[in-house]
Amino acid sequence: MPRESLDLDFVRRQFPPLGNGWAFFENAGGSYAPQSVIDRVRSYMTEAQVQPAWSFAPSADATERIARGRRAVAELINAEPDEVIVGPSTTMNVYVLAQALRSAFAPGDELIVTNLDHEANNGAWRRLAEFGVTVKEWRIDPSNGALAEADLDALLTDRTRLVCFTHCSNVVGTIHDVAHLTRKIHAAGARVCVDGVAFAPHRQVDVKALDVDFYTFSAYKVFGPHLGILYGKREHLLSARGQNHFFIGEDDIPLKLNPGGPNHELTAGLVGVADYFDAVYRHHFDAPENSFHKRAGRVYALMAAHEERLADRLLDFLRGKPGLRLIGEPTMADGRRAPTISFAVPGRSSQALQTALERERIAVGYGNFYAHRCVEALGLDPEDGVLRVGMAHYNRLEEVDRLIEALDPLI
Image (tube, rainbow, N blue to C red):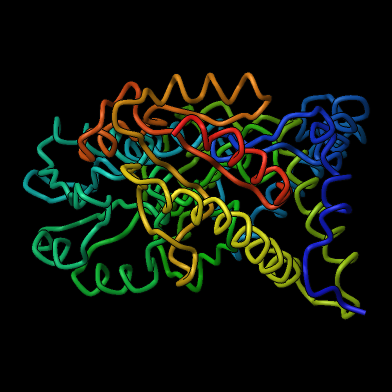
């Protein structure tokens, strides 16, 4: 019989570090990897650690393992394999993309960025001002960190060529209606580049349904190895200028947009993410699904429901603390919040709070999390910033209660 809720005991058995005694709530910075990912990386390095792309058998095996990794992540987000670049990080992927698109902009063309995004989907685009591009800023409401659609409307013109924004802020936690915003931006004649780093660990991404032009996220925050993933519509990747060696053809995607090529063993390890989703699917559901994307979607639904319970437990507690500044949506009720919860306590150092929790073997983060512009716009010290609790589907309610018990006397 299908299970209606996530079997947390089964899930936690897949992640070796979860037995270390820590309540781990820094998942927004990087999640644990399941044993299946570890096994895939180890298998590649012990059985196929040779240069790929040759015809002899060990090299052909390595080639196929790498290709399977790219196919797995492409299927996860409903893309084609040649629309996916597996690079070293989201920051590097966006930087390379910005350079690849640079020649498509003429002086006076306009590009819109936010002061909400992680710097990965920010700084590389702002640097194009050096080449005559006009950079506009879609600014948050400093009281709550929200982006207002009306403010975007005021920025869009017939010179707008690209709008870069986040699916979900890694500090504020608000989930944006990417499909709706993309339709609006396309109607204005511009393209979109969406940062999904803080969204992809919690909800399924479907790049075709969203109709985004470019979408980026970090595999190591979606239970995978330390890699960044960049999706682009094939026609856009073809027209982008190659950033690899001069002899790599302009039609050779994704290699032309991946200087040095992908990390072989970690790309092969991406198959382990698919292994994990499929293991959870088989454990919870009887009926087969025809595609990995659909199976992953049903697993994501289980994960999201569990994470909602975790986050609501903490949000209920935080709302009851007078004077505490909770960043973003106050509840999980309307589906507009990820379980990434940031707050600041007037008169208390976020770093000091983090250190106090660390003594209780509770792992959280503090600071600006590379969203320096966002934290500054919120009126907070970007260095001390906020205390952030990043939950994942493998966390227990008992761990949230442990966090609350430790926080209560501190705030």
